[in-house]
Length: 598
Image (spheres, rainbow, N blue to C red):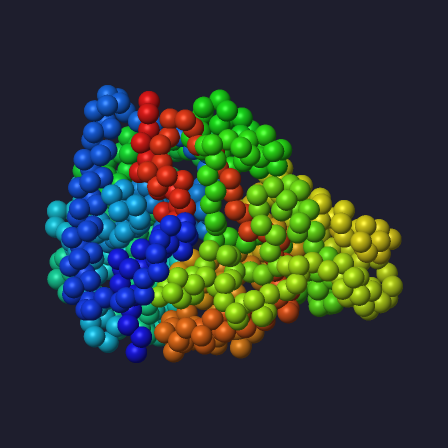
């Protein structure tokens, strides 16, 4: 059996792969205990260094530091039902878990550190049983104790058969607990699920399959819920709770306490000095404002109202040489979901039409013409995703991907016209009409839809195709996607940078929050086997499975990839990033560990 990659080595590889400043190192650690002791020692050193450096800066600044940002709207802060990025970002401020990845300023690389855990997790010889020992004396902001039973309750509720929480799939694929799915479906008792409290301060995960060490470390970071508030918000038949729906119905176990929540306008957070994560966060206060529109957000940056902003379009032309610019490499691909079973415009059921749209998509015009820094793509997995941490290999660097990669990222006007004429003939030589949804609070997304509309109508003929655009808030659009009540719509597909196979679960036929209606048994089997099944430690076969899954989805054209939204980002002069502009998966630029000069 392939040995799991040590955490310290994995983080070193992360630095070398994603910022190009590391060295080639393929040595594995000797034993799990030795790995854990070394990592725990380094984690404690990291925490002490961060705490000292932040205190020194506080003395210099002699006043509270504030981080200001623009964020989207928030529906809920219940970690069991999160769907929007802003919701996740906020839960990272008011929530904590067993461990966390942070930036080690001294070593200049990411590391894992214990937070609610007393030390990093350990695993037995089978690779399936993981144990986490917790610190004593942990508390919620209201003084309620946090211990092993807090986590047991939280996971039990997330998997509750009546609540049907959307986050439950974590325990089916990414962190495959024994009998988790059976309990969720009402086919076994909670006592049969592989998550136990061995004592008041020790929890144990028993997995159905062995998974790579880095996958466990990334997925065991569970945000607990406050049992008192969760129960207080439960309806009579226990099918729903209003936990996390306003400031009085959520509590903090993380580095910050929410102090104000004006829905769709403003949120503020104050630092908890006694929180276990406090040493890794510089700001004393964080403020989020909802700003509609990119132009307004960029102006807010110029006015000093937000700390950072993406530089797009004409703004990039103006600021391209600004020395403050830093560049990220995201784990997200944007494009258009296509409903092959749409009840609105049945013509989209014709695969020839969907292929015409795929090959005719104006990727270059959208990516470079509108956004400038975005990368045109014709496939669904982002370039940041790794497939072999031992060698530091990214998916798109493999020979398997290169052999499959569509020429010119899939853009081919001649082939698009060929497919379209077949679809047009099948439609009785009548004009083809369908609707495309875009997010109406984003002028760039509207531009994206308009460029697509104009391109298709010019390419195929206005007498033959009529693309009708429909603006909608992002959350409403995604609700329509999940209900299957749409033709096409702008959206994104994201991946775990270290486990893109698990991220393909969103296209699995049993995924509860699917944006597509298409189902494929072969896809389901490949996704299950490669994410946490028998292929998890077979590198070449696992890569081949990822390629095959992409082929299946692209053949059916359930999603038309357009761009990977890599950003150029400007930070205010008062922000000093410890990561020195280097971008890392998960922690990104380690923004909240920065120095803020007031």
